[in-house]
Length: 324
Image 1 (cartoon, one colour):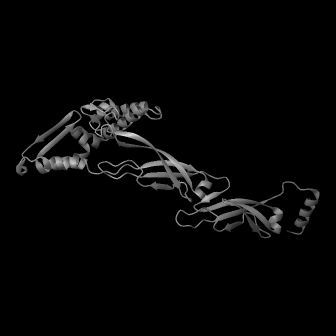
Image 2 (cartoon, helix red, strand yellow):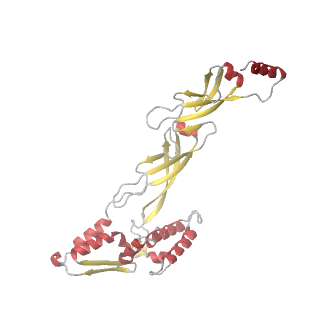
Image 3 (cartoon, helix red, strand yellow):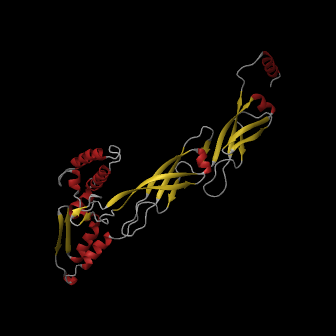
């Protein structure tokens, strides 16, 4: 947005009330939104310009600084501090730049300190922006670990105009004067075993490039693990229900219990009560830190018969008579 007039971007006069600025922003944001213009790079660039302009003009303090110092509004505090120290004043607006010099005193007319301090701050290294991507996984993928290919787009300095936004006196047609272009790339990411919903995986140095020699940002992969009908997950522990016929619960038996690595046999003692919970140590989810695993808890659901023949009914009646 360097050199651009924020009021012109939104199509409002400089003295426009906040209501008009807000209405202009909403209209332009809807018009140029990427969802409305899929694949249209020009619309995407215009959408960013509109958002950048509105971010400044919708904030009373930022707008006041912008009206006074133009594109240097972010350095308003430093500029005013230098004014107090040197007796020089500096004004910049969307229509141009004006320097006003009062009594230079002991400065002897040397302006290098003023410009060096001001524009040296502009060129200070700035770390690149972090990027974030969301990914869904199954419980099995979260158990074993998985790979994902991310499609990322990041801003980088325009190679045609070397990030200046201009070629000579003409606006660069590649970046439309922004000084940056969007670069699409693919990134292979390995998701470690044990992730859960909300886990954030950091890929260092794969974010947007920094400015002024600053370091690159990072990429964060935010994980959502889809529910699994077989298990309920609580941290690294898993819970599952296992049906047991009434006779097996009374007399004892062995039942199959599902796990994420296959089935195991569980010994059910005689006279096991309904909803009895058995702990199968180390058969839950891997833990992100360390090599341990959580536990699997099997809840027994005693299944009652839905029909009885005459002989079975007599047997149950005998049990009832016996007070069982």
